[in-house]
Amino acid sequence: ALKRLREAANSNDLDTVQQLLEDGTDPCAADDKGRTALHFASCNGNDHIVQLLLDHGADPNQRDGLGNTPLHLAACTNHVPVITTLLRGGARVDALDRAGRTPLHLAKSKLNILQEGLSHSLEAVRLEVKQIIQMLREYLERLGRHEQKEQLDDLCSRLQMTSTKEQVGSV
Image 1 (cartoon, rainbow, N blue to C red):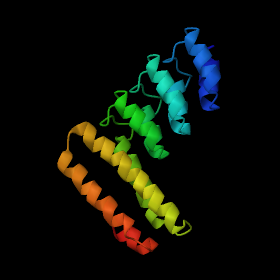
Image 2 (tube, helix red, strand yellow):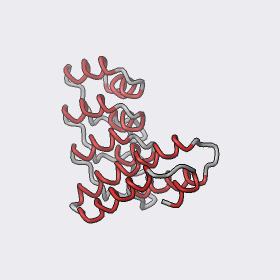
Image 3 (cartoon, helix red, strand yellow):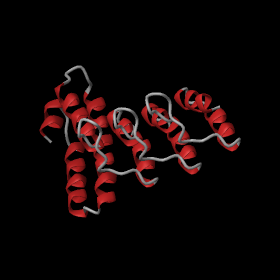
């Protein structure tokens, strides 16, 4: 049942996850690499499964073998609704992986990769940047840094006025 829970979370099978949790399957059980169902659901961006697992006692700060928390994986894959759910569920924003990176570091790395990529359309780049800004807002709100949150709001407003990828990059 433990393996089935991770597999169901990894394949976005909400009904099976729900049934297994109702049957008493441990949501914190990890595989040989330290990954839990919450790690898989967070990486896949399945907000409903993430919330269900949290509601049944999954630990949002449990680390896998590389030191990643579910928040690291959600930040790395830019799943903003999952990030928000994890933050509200008690995920630590200052958790370090084995390489010494926080979830914010991973999100910034993704932003830099986006800025370098020339194959994305303007709308795709703008949308990804807006999602990252939303994640940063949640992060700053969680830390109680309201001044910096206002700066992000200003950044988002300026982003709305852009019409080229170069302008998006300069914002």
